[in-house]
Length: 295
Image 1: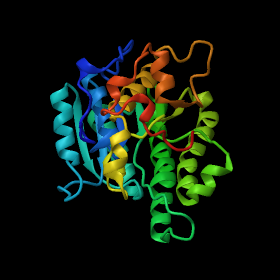
Image 2: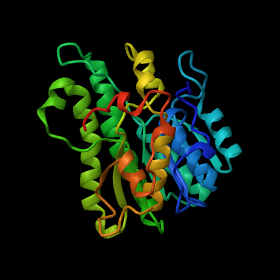
Image 3: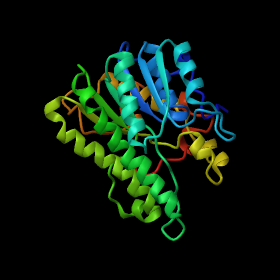
Image 4: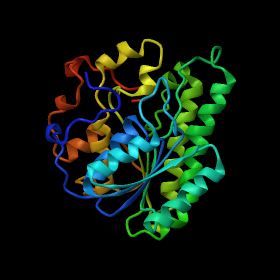
């Protein structure tokens, strides 16, 4: 099985890019592993500049890699990388990351709000420290990074904010199943909805991306029964390819708005010409993959 921090080899990906991120600067929160690192790797193959803001500066006993080892991978893949140890909950860390990106690479073209915390406990069982953590990282962190990057994005020729958050599905099922987490993820999605409208006149595209199936990540593996759950997951490379397609335009926007969208990985890749998603699977047949939540 592919580990949570390995990407599908380029030769095995069914996605054929029609655009490039060469020379563009991405600022990614929580990009030291998993989906964030997979997105960064895909951009690095184009020759992009990637600023990684993540908390893991030292090896973690349960989590593979650090922001520094991730940066080394990006350079090996063909990009430029600036690793920064920081926390999206700290205003000074986020402000410093934006400033460092401008100083090192001359600006910021793309913000990827990837950092997120998860706890699927019911209201009776959720610890309020976990509740606060999800609100601080997911909602406030997304808002803060987007907000502080706005001056740099306004100076970019092709500015984009992409947040890894779900469509705003108001079916009571999702709020009733894990209210604390639902509020935190929907807070990220409300940021997309609001900023897309607010920033139209500035030409800054703001969109969200969400997987149709469970994705194998360290966060999922560390949940109860996580090792069993990921047996029916796809690898993070499907989200990396989908993010690349969104950020380069692909065939998504023929007759459609380029901002304020809540894309799914399958929707984006189908528009880019992918007809067979089996290469992204970790081994389970397509009809046995676990659907992701909120869809």
